[in-house]
Amino acid sequence: MREGAVAALDADFARLAVARALMVGPVRPDRPLVEDRRVAERWVARFGAGPAGAEVRGERTSAGSLVVRPSGAAGARDDVRVVYLHGGGMVYYSTAVFAPFLQVLADEVGAPVECFDYAKAPERAVGESVDDLARRVRERCHTLAPRRLLLLGDSVGGLLGLHLALRVCPGAFERVGLLYPVLDLHGERGSYDEFGEGYFLDRDRMRLFRGLLRPALAERDLDPMHLTDVDLARLGSPLVVTAGCDVLRDEGHAWVDGLRARGVAVEHQVFPALPHDFCLYAPRLPAARDAVRSIATGLTRTLRTPAGDGGTTPGRTT
Image (tube, rainbow, N blue to C red; front, side, top):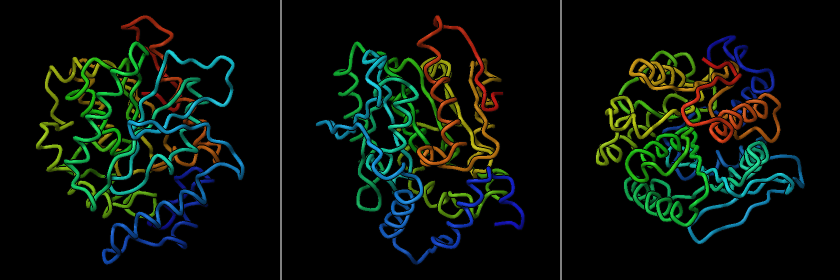
């Protein structure tokens, strides 16, 4: 981490970044990915989960998903479902790891959130996992009809969400939201250098993830940085969230700029003082919880406004 760079982070995340550097250390090329996964999941369980005894109102489905319902039954909507795809580079995490955050999201949205597990690399080829996930989500979308479906994914889950919305289930989702998404599988921008170490997603680990993802997405004819006009029509008016202290920040900004130049009405929420994966810490850290509240407001905007209406949301919205 560059000297003084951690000062750019929210104060709570800055302290957490120092602790993580001491307890987890830098990426070790000699450490197997499976062991890396265990280290990452132990860290999130300790520092991202909510207070001891906090309940997650979740239930498993036969589709390999976890449905988390809002804590307060009064006012909760069952005519709406958030379909969630979790991040982790196709290597880390699971619905169990994400469950405390999903409870926060369900509470803020006021509707159930359904998150899908998928097999991880290196045990399973990425392409096989993508196809299996696509099949299960497509079948589940039919089961959930006529509910209003909102699609949300973080990091590689954002990339998977684009694949589902544009290639697998076009027209199924009322709105698509991408949280600090993986978008550019070929190039790197300045944020890779600026936030390459010590900001929860290191540059070297992201390069490894890209190497796993690139061939699988190419085989499925998806390059987010070069979408067709048909793709844009299917995408509608997406919500894009970028974290200011994230190796993926600049590709997110570039993607938003490119879509707007082509006439797409993008809602872009920017959280300058937050790092990659900040949503996982929403059960504990106020800045992350506030960001999730803003994201929930943006995601559900179409539920309260006529189709075609625009809007902006704080965070900072651009």
